[in-house]
Structures are given as structure tokens and as C-alpha cells.
Length: 313
Image (cartoon, rainbow, N blue to C red; front, side, top):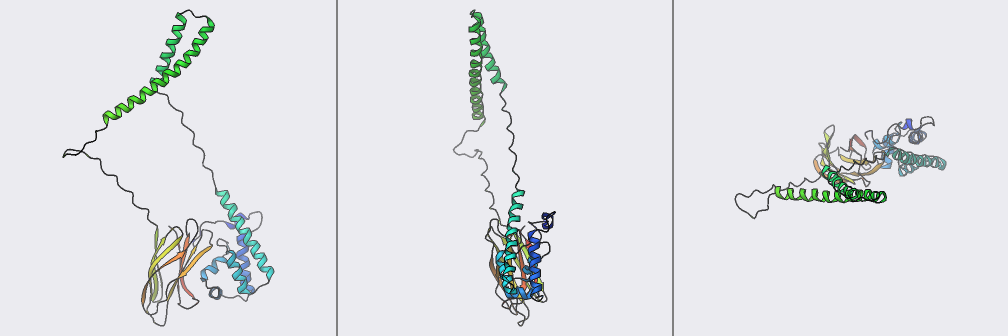
């Protein structure tokens, strides 16, 4: 599967040894060596998975850690001791902790946008000042004592607020009136009537697609992947020119961490061409990150002849 999602596993363990993902991949490689250096193709055939999947689980960079179910299946295939399984499952638990920690550290809270200051229209300020000033002048001319003048200043601010409110209401009302005057009146028909253009409906959101074409000798599998939210649709054609050389197509979906989400296989074709439409399970939020497609030999279980990985657009 193409690199993506989890990067730099060795860097995560800087100063504290290799990461759990690297150790898990190393452990799985050692298991196969202890089982007599079984070929990856043999292991894949026994577990009914793609050979490329076994290769990913053993990748030295640890980018595609084997899920717990795969660890148990490999342990059973190699017929190892119980303590080997316990150590591997402990590593798998540490992998989950690393992935959760990496996801948490990647979360960056968006800064709260600063609120723009509210601008008070000049007409509102002027109106408030005018009303307040009138109150102040009236108090002085009436010969009010200092205490009353202080009260007058207080009334000045109250009157300023009242004047500002009244002026603001006037501005809004005036704006509505101007808007009404400038807006054409609705008509009921006629040759000269100008109608606004009808709104254009937004096109429906299309799911992304990816074409594939894998050729091996005189056989091939080709078609299109459609990336849905929780599955991947595969529509295409398988071909075999030789009746004795049957062919099938195996497709497997993966998460961004390299975890296998689901796998499916088309019908086998022998000496002919055959169209097929299948769904590849990927029941996680966001769907599959990538899909591996293999042209197999048509046997049960199949041997993979040629594989290619495709990442979600």
C-alpha cells in the first residue's frame, strides 16, 4: 500500500528505542524465520490473504502494523509457543497507544477570531451629542445649583443614549425605505416583465474514482474503483486467453495505518473475458485509504501473480 497516514516510526522512538510498530514487524519476520523461512506466498495461501499483505506486516519501517486478528492467525500458522503470542499481543497494544497518541498530538485547536469593534454611525453620535447638550444648556440657564448640575450631567448621558438609540432606529428605517424604493415591484405578467434568473441547483457531490489496469502475460484485470464512504465499488473486466490458465481478481481495502479493512474476490475466468461488479468492505469513518488489487491464478486459495496499490484520490 502506498505510504501515508503514519510516518516516521523510527523517529517516534528516538531516545527510547524503536517504536512498537517497528518491533512488531521485526517480531513477525522472526516468527517466519523460526518456522523454517516459509515463503511469504506460502503463508499468504495458508491464511487466504494477499502475499503483499504479509509483506506489509513485515515491512521494516513498521508503517502497516498487523491487526490483532492477523497476529493470532500468523502465530497459529507458525505453531509457536504461548509466550510468543503474549509478547506480540503486548506489542500490538502498544501500537494502538502510539496511534492514539499521534492522533491526539496532531489536533490543533483553531484560534478564536477576534471580534471587530462595532462602528457607531456618525449620525448616531451627532444626534446623541445634540440631545445631551440641549439638556445641559437647559440646566445651566435655569440656574441650577451644583448638585443639580451634576444630576444634569447624568441626565446628559442618559439623553445621549436615548438620542443615539432614536437616531439608530431612524437610520435603519431610512435604509429599509431606500431598499424598498430601489427594489422593483413584483409584476403579474406581461411581455415586458423582467424576471430574475432561476437559481441553478448545485450538482450532486460525486464520489471519486480511480481506473486500474493490471496485465500479466496474456491475461489482465481492469476497471474502475469508486470510493464510497464505507466501501469501495469495483466495476471491471477479467480476461484469460488460455482456457488452462484461469484468472481471478482479489481486492483488499486498507486504512491509513495499513490495517486491512476487508477483502473480496471476483469470479474466476478461464479462456474468456468476464465483467464483474463487487463491493470491497471498508466500514470505518471516511472509508478506505487505499486498495490493493491483485491478478491471481484462479486457484483456491489463490496465488497472487501481479499486484498494484491505489490510494484514495
